[in-house]
Image (cartoon, rainbow, N blue to C red; front, side, top):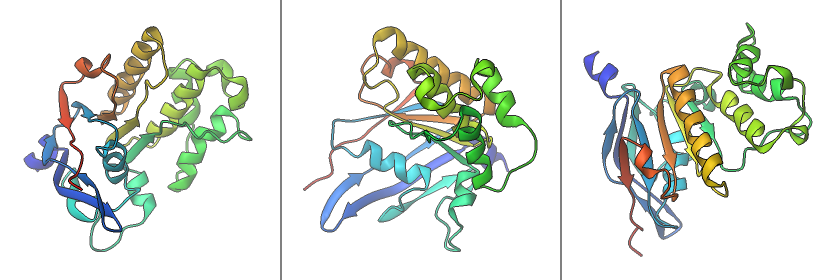
Length: 218
């Protein structure tokens, strides 16, 4: 039990290839609960690939990932709902559904894992300053508001692990800082571990841990 509480995420011998091309060779690392971590590396080093593996989107060619003492890719083949209840993802392109309101975009994440009870989506959006924008569709929201909706969608199921892919890409200094603070606040709200894939030198120093990825050998 002590191991599970203190070592939330463990990555061991993880690598991935497409056809005959190696695209990721990740170093072994462990992260403790509430620890903020940045995945650092040049373009093509496999940051997004590793993020997809941690998200349960992509099964690694080799190696394993443990989350709270449980295998993220167990032999019994647990389905995507099992992973979605434990991992929240904020993609670089936010992928909010244009036909749905802010509230329903967040509720969609709940429906996916079969959670249709309570009003946590509404409360969460209110806590993120969007009480007056609950029924607005994405096209009526500012970029910052859209990001907050995406964050709410990622954390509404109280994940153990929160992932973000290049969250400050294309943002100016002020909005970049605001974006990182929102991510930290989201992690605090759920008690989740935060892992961010980034090439942005402006924000690297904000993370207590950094995992450096090198390009896989050809």
